[in-house]
Image (tube, rainbow, N blue to C red):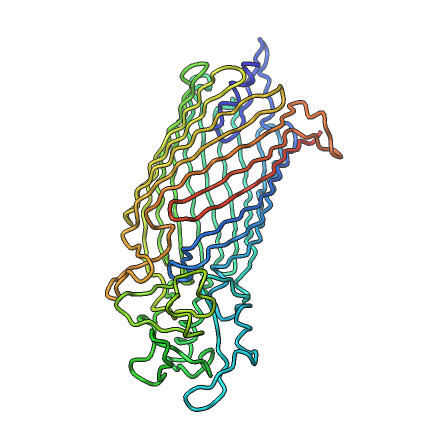
Length: 487
C-alpha cells in the first residue's frame, strides 16, 4: 500500500516509466504502455460579472460553456506511444454578443411599430436599442471552439529517457492556430531525479471581428448615413440627436484596424524533480514565453475620458448608462478598439512540494511567480489534500489563491486618454486577487474489474470548483472524468 501511494506522488512526471528486471542472462523490458487507454472529460462552466471587455470595461460577463475532451493513447510497440487529444467546446457569451448590441431581443431589433418616433425632419425613424448589460441576439453570441493534437513519444530501452513531438490545431470564429513542439525527459539516480526540457511554437492567425459601429464606419469611409447607420439617430450626452454631417459628429479616434493578422507564441520550459525521501518530493520549473504579432483583441472597445460621448438608443437611459438595473435601451459608440504592444515576454517560475503524511493522506502544494514586460506581476498558491477514504475512493479538497498587479496599459471605463499609444479595458489585465475552492472525488480500480465492452474502467472522478475575483467576477465549474483501459 505504501509503495503504491508513493508512486502516486510522482505527479510532476509527464509519463509513467516502467522498471527493469534483470537476471544473469538477459534484461526484461516492460512495455511503456501495456494497452490502449482512453480518457474522457466533460465539463460545464458558468460565470457572471460586470466588467466585459467587449463593451469597454463595463457590461455583462455572463458566459456558459459546455466542453468535452477525449485523449486516446495507443502503444505502437514496447517503446513507442501514439496519442490523440481532442476538445470541443460550445459557449454562449453576453460579452461577445455585443459586438453588435443592436440585435438585442429587448430592443425588438428596432423594427417594431412601438419603437417608432419622428426625427427632426418629420420622418419615421425606428429606434435601434442596445445595452452593455443584456446579451444581444446576433451570431456572435455563441460559438464552438475546437482543438486537437497528435503526439508521438519514444522511451529508451533502459526507460531513463523519453522524447516526444506533437502537432496541434485550434479553431474559433475569430482565429485559427497551428502548433508544434518537442520535449525530452531524463531520469537519473535510480529514477529519484528527473530533468525535463520542452519547446513549443504556436502560429495563430486572426480572422478579426470588430465592434459593429467601428467596422461600419471604416467600411463606408466615414459615411454616417450608410450601412448600419442608415436611418439611425446618433445622440450626444444630453440625448439630443446630432447632425451626422457635422465635423463634431461621432467618429473613432483611429481608423486603422488589424494590420498584421499573425500572432505567434514561442515557449521554452525547464523542470527539475527530486525525491528527497520516501515521504517528500520537490519539483522546480521555469518557463520563457515570447509573443509577437497583433496581441490586441479587435473585438474589445475603448472609451476615452477626453472625448465626447455618443449613443444609439433611448435618450432617457443615458444618465443611467453604467447602471445594470436601469439601462435597458442605450449603447455608447466606441472611441477605438483595444491597442497593445506587438510583443510580450512572460517569465513564470515556481515549485511543487508533495509530502506523504501516511497511507491515507498526502499534502500537495504549488507556488508560481509570474512577471512580464507589460507590468504584470502575480503570485499563485495552490494547496491540495488528497484523503484516501477507502481502498478505491479518494477525496480531493483544494484551494487556490492568486493576485496580480495591473498591466501598464490597463484603464477602466473612460479612464484612458486618446493621446496614449496603448490601452485596454480588459479586466484580465487589471489589478485583482482571486480565490478558488474545490472538491473532487475519485474512484480508482487498478485491476479494472468493471468493463464496458472491451474496456476496463480504471478510474472515475467528479470535481467541483467555485471561483471568485475581487472585481466581482464569479464562476462555477463541474467536471466528470473517466479513464478506460483496453482489456
